[in-house]
Image 1: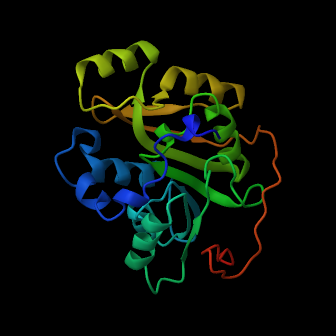
Image 2 (image 1 turned 90 degrees about the horizontal axis):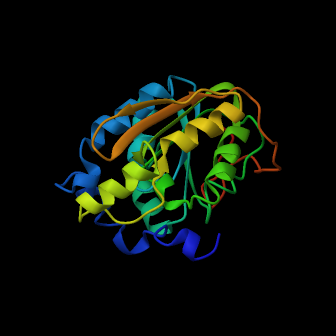
Image 3 (image 1 turned 45 degrees about the vertical axis):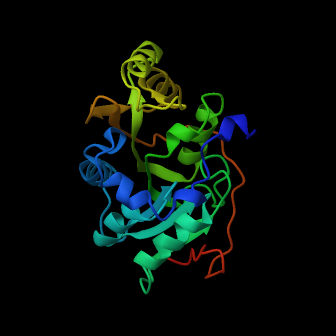
Length: 234
């Protein structure tokens, strides 16, 4: 990605304040815990599931997946955010965290590696230009029949997005998900997008992987590493 495509993706400078933000009174994170719980439920995370958490941040979504007995890999561009995630999960052998500059576009794992791919409050940092490529990459590492689920800032269409930007001075101009575009892309890939609105700006999106996508060449050695890959689970 170019810098313009990736304008607010690195959260190193705010890593220590992030958890207080999401549990504070910022409208962007209204119903935060409910959204995360809904993503885990939509992804059908259960004991033994292999879960990939993209934009894992401080690990709040990963913790919920671990609580259901899943094995979790979390990717994020921010090493300081990941340090906080590692501190929360220290001693748990079922989780690994890895720093990846573009976690939605360069997933370092083979095809069909995971039962679920999840993400919350991160995909709006990926530019509209490359969002289709990112969806294909997520589906590449998801097994056929596996679940993709995301909770994020989204709007029904570009008109709704612009209307919200005019109405809310607290809403920054980001690469918000446009549900009509996402639905069309999932149809092209043989899937069906489901959506549930939680707030005026926050939606839950989920779909089952139909297995119709371009295969990439992701790879990762098994076993623990200093980067937190540790993909010997499952």
